[in-house]
Length: 418
Image 1 (cartoon, rainbow, N blue to C red):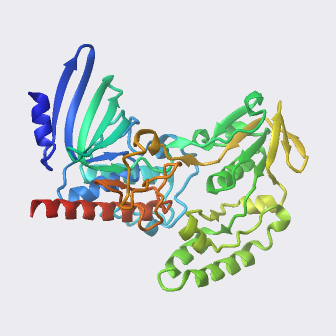
Image 2: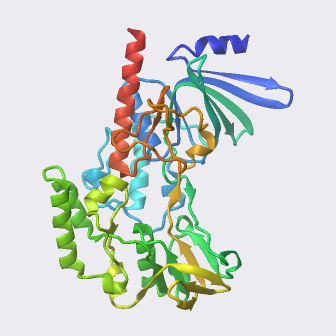
């Protein structure tokens, strides 16, 4: 009888009920929801808030034991939002008036906690989605998740499914020949907190994005003998320049804004090519718009590179013992390696490839778990499938995604009830 009632009500948009069921030794629950949001980080929380503005019922699941676990547990101590606060607000709630222009990690976490309280968001923590498929007959999504706190399985059916697990779900650590035999510490930036414990040690940072450059600075200022691998061209800007660029982008063509920023950057930092840092051919704002790649916002790293305190290295060819050999044939011993090589999306691990289709019948996400469609048309798939926060557009992009998705779901529901 429970299964018949469950099937009948999958068609009711505002239906939300749980069925505990015992089959032999397997305990599982069946839950029917209007919208299921996967992920309770900075992408999932605003999605929930935007749905609540339309009184659209939803459930939100999170595999960790808290919201925004990356920010709480896997971010280095000195981290701040790299953009000014006006570009980093979530929908329907501003930062406190007295908040600094550039929000530190602790204040951002408090902002998220206040956000959860403001919109009464109640994530189901320690709930890890294992699979999801679309049922063409029932016209709904079937999602299987594991409740790790109860060691039970939860089977959701949902009219709409929102992927909000983010771009940073899993650590990305590239392999180098010999890395497995390196005798020193090998950590990802998500495990790095402070350079205090590395004073006097030879440390290699791999990755020259914002995290890598800031970690290199932190290590050097704590007395570590620091080297950083810079393999690709990067734009180096000050936070003030980026704030100016994002403001000007509302009024001027991007190519003109790019010219202003590049000229200003050259006046501030000079020619960095002699220090092993080259500039991309594409301008900083255009590069972000076209590829999602961010500029490096300098926190003092460039000054230490110019003084020779932080040493720039090229690509690695192999590692033998504690010796790292670079492609230029240089060899150097290291006590520790920090991988600031970013993260990757894990959505493809549970979102079945053959069902997440967009209007033209192509996959909505690529092999890396990121949208195939370019911004701003990336967020909507077929059959009530959406993604928020996967366009590499930061918190401002997340806010736009969440609003677009909530509006679209409301439109679909209104058309079904009319």
